[in-house]
Image 1 (cartoon, rainbow, N blue to C red):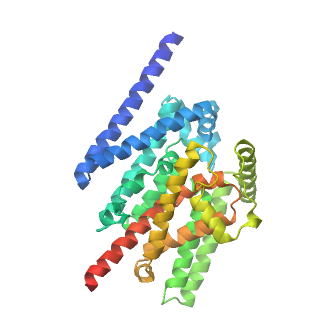
Image 2: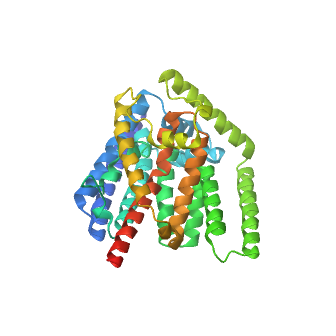
Length: 391
């Protein structure tokens, strides 16, 4: 009887995986037809994303990763609501019904999370193509769209069972709701989910929102200033209430996260060597550079680091291209783009200031890379339209 149950379990998971992948392929065809996208680009995006998904899954079985721990902890949990919490606990909470109710194996759950991030890539593809001149942006005479969405690291770090895949999915949906002025209830749901995945991202967004109001509104009054101050208090209280509801001490959470990052840094320093930096030896601008563009060939010791170096060189060229096309007039005119820019700067400055391990930065930076890519195409299209109008 046990052997029969095992066979049913294996067959069910096999059918589920095939059905999920077939559904995603169908989705690719449907999206391509509805939006007049080039089908081979969408299918190539699909191939790259799921190739990295299977590679990451296989690697995590050989060298135990966070994804493995999430799955095992969810499997061993005795009740669903015992897992409720924020950050890693929230991922275990979401994984529990997939494991216990749907009886999905590790690879099947992995594919579910990967599919969420792939939908994010399709959404980002669509957002970029909404700009009139997105396909004419070139570097060294080579169009960078859709090449920019084929970056290996962008897929590798967002395809796994864990916070990064879900955060990428939510962040892209946030951009879509922001620029298209979609329902406020939808935006509230997105922010709530992001708060449960990575609380500090919501704090960064809130700071960017407040600065956007206070620094760039010409009709800013004492009344509005009071409302901003009141909003800060309400925001802090709301976060505190959420932490209390989830039975999480806010300060303990912050210190625990810092301690965990320190332990990770130490392990990677022992295993890899050279990934740890002494923060006091670098100014904030140098650390911002290290956060976004390291490794960059010098010091690269493995094939993965060499591939990451080529990717970082491409990102560096993109950022330089963006800086030289920067237009203050564009950001004064468009509130939502200004908010995205301020969020990116706040994220980068704070994260770079706290930087002590390059290995962590390699993964974390992909939480703002989609924003940077989006802003580059937005700025370029605006500049081209202005040139056409002035000409």
